[in-house]
Length: 141
Figure (cartoon, rainbow, N blue to C red):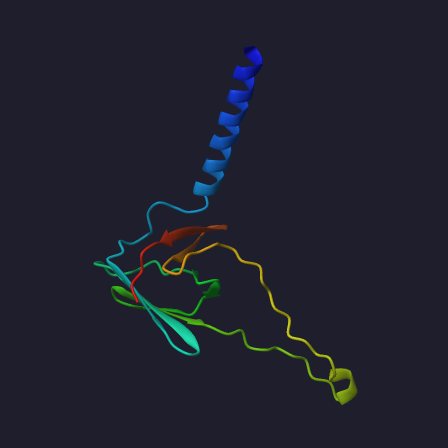
């Protein structure tokens, strides 16, 4: 009977620990109230508009959307305008000897910071030495 209580206790503690780690990745409240989030898909980039009912004074340092990220963020009063490229541009080092260029491959970084659904956006705000993240769900196209 005591071993059953120990096993149940260990499972409960493990479950609580795992749930608290996953939820601590995101903050509950962004630095400004969000009224509406709209995104548009183009051939080459995503455009995202985040509208607030107050003037936005704290601008995110990075935005994640559909496994892409960008720090190209402009603020216009109570609106954030974000542009995220859909394709990674090649950064190939050229050599004066064309034979050394043969076999050049593009390095692709598939490290995903977040696992996001199609309608989720993550805003990253730099505060002191750390970046705090806030997830927005249910965006509209």
